[in-house]
Image (cartoon, rainbow over the protein chains, first blue to last red):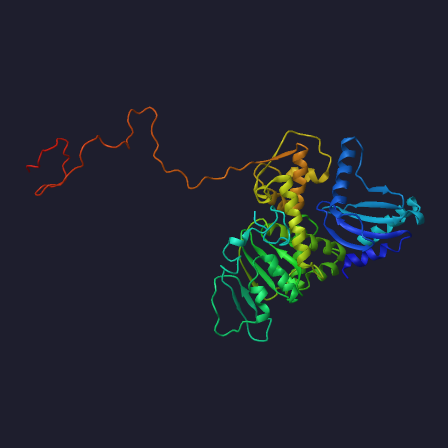
Length: 117
Length: 338
């Protein structure tokens, strides 16, 4: 198991998280996946970039930090991980019935910061 | 465009390997040479260059799939099946080196894209002095990654991300032109990703990248070589776009920009596609030379007659016996009386 996979496996301990993936924020390359398979990485990357650009053109200030899409059963959360170099996308699937999205976001972002530090 | 490392199963005409008619690519036309010491895998040197049989070596039947590989993709798959730890040296423009451990691709080094070392240094993550210290501590080059972690210069996860990205980017850069030949040699220590990338995944991802860029830009190889010009000042929202614009000077190509910034070639090309769409930059359309330069004589427009004009009509000069040179017989029938 690679260092990335070991790091992502720790994120599965967060309540409600069923799958996580680490994706390149520019190329859409999947570095590792843990748990349930997440969205298509290249599509995820393209969608996130479009949202960020559209918001910037619309006059939103600051950089996008996360994107949350909620379906009937799940939350699809994408964190933009800024670093020196191209950004990373940390994608997570959360079971909606077992998740308070506000608490989950706080918990997940803290764990992600530890793993990716 | 020739994808040297692409998915051989793809049916996309823009991504298939068209080298079946190239020398060396087809086992029927390209010679093969597989010689190594019996029972020893460390002394293996396999090349697809013109056939020369080493009388001292014996050909191993298990290497048949390696020696008859029709392209680099097939070669990597064959080496993976054998779980070989080796180095594949691909000659060509740009060519490159593919490092394998147990058949998995752990590093790709090519002049067409920045290596991990170049990315670390050019991006400013580590200084030249820090890198020199790492090299001194690990002269063999086998434990550079561990040394970087030990000195807290780059984290393990961060280094794995960088090495993985460099593998895919190097493969993409190498796929932009046709390899002339390749050679399988002993493993060489290098800064590499552990455990490595499956060759099948590498070829699939490279094919996906080529297909995407073909749809967005046309020929990816041309796009990578085209000079980039800055257009009128449009508002720039992305910090990455600002960085790229700081490098655009009308002379640099996407490859130059990638090396300057310490980023991968493919992500730079993707950013340039977006920037072109936003009206920030444009690519220089290169005209293909039609052949060798013209050597036709120039004619002065004002001159009444060209100095290279043929002489006036008449019979050719004739040499006559006893004469000292040719005499122009401007008057037909006249003989040389000297």
